[in-house]
Length: 185
Image 1 (cartoon, rainbow, N blue to C red):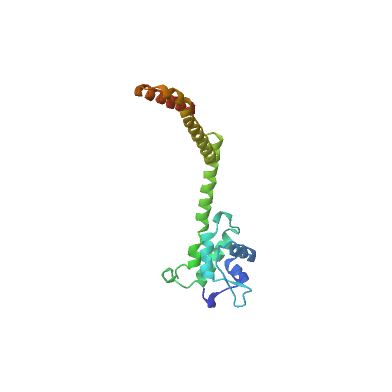
Image 2: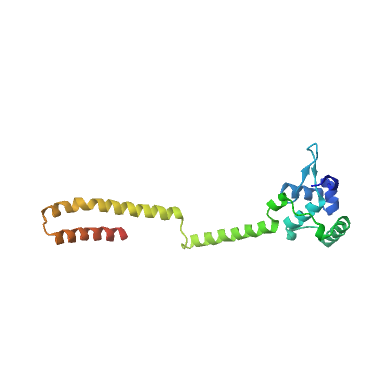
């Protein structure tokens, strides 16, 4: 911001055609940039940059004042702004870092709609919590492991006396299939 065009909050409010409370709220919410005076006590505002940021970051549907205030603002800014559009300075790094109000509002509404959709799907049973799925998968794997570990205890006596490899193979496969069927239920 350049020192020669800076305004106080009250001066900017008169320039803008709004209350100083509205300007203070815009500053507090980060909608317009300011800098502190050399003593660090008062906010100083560059009207050209603040006007751009105000327009970009303000919800038009919530503005008060009507057409008369907007006409006065347009008249004041056209008189005070002698630069042409080609001579405009590029946006400051501070104003580039802030998302525009309307973009933020769109994102907020999108995420609200997404949350409503997820809640709906959860209530109708088409969506389950990841923790529940992990717990169920862990329980199933634990049961499978326990039953597989029990196979040697059940078959060791039978296989110890069996000398036919085909019958040993059939006994082992039968036990494994039995375990898998029980786990899948």
